[in-house]
Image (cartoon, rainbow, N blue to C red; front, side, top):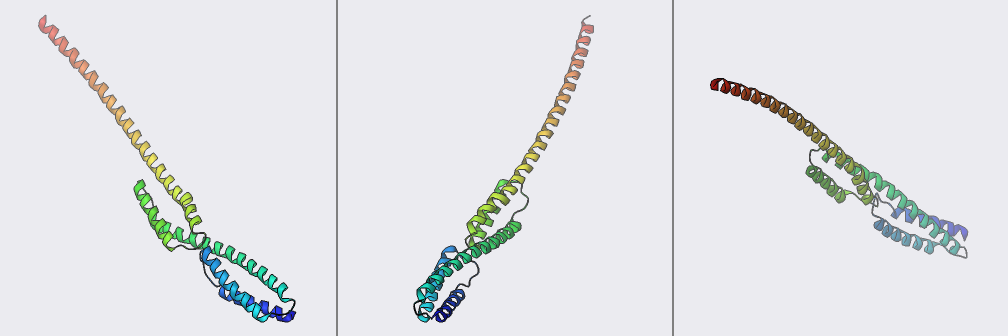
Length: 193
C-alpha cells in the first residue's frame, strides 16, 4: 500500500503542478488558483491511495502543497517586482525629461502612473509605484527645484548688478546736477555783481 500511496502522491503533485502554471498574477488570483489545484490534487490522491498509510501520506501531501504555495507566492512576488520595475522605468524614461515648471512634471508623472496602473500586474504593483514616487519622481523634482533655485539666484544676481549700476548712474547724475547747480549759482552771482 505504501507504493500505491507514493504513486498517488506523485500523481497528485503532478496534477497540482500542471494547474499552477502562470506568469504574474495578483495574490488573490494565486490563492484561487492554488485552491482549485489543491482540490484537484487531493481528489487525485484520494482516488488512487488506499490502506492504513493513506492518512499519513495525505498529511504529507497537504504539507507539500502548502510549501509549494509558499514557493509560488515568493516567485510571483519577485517576478511581479521585476516586471513592474521594468515597466515603470520604461514609462518614466519615455515620458519624463528635464523640466522648467512643476505643472509639466506633475502632468508627466500622472501620465506614467496612470499607464503603469493600467498595465502592471502582480502583488508588487503598488509597492513599485510607491517606490517610484519616492525615488525617481523625487529625484526629478529635486533637479527641477535646484534648477529653479539656480535660475532665481542668477536673476537675483542680475537684479543686484542692475541696481548697483543704477545706483552708480544716479551718483553720476547727482554729481552732474551739483556741478550744473554750482555753475548756475556762480553765473547768477556774476550777473548780480
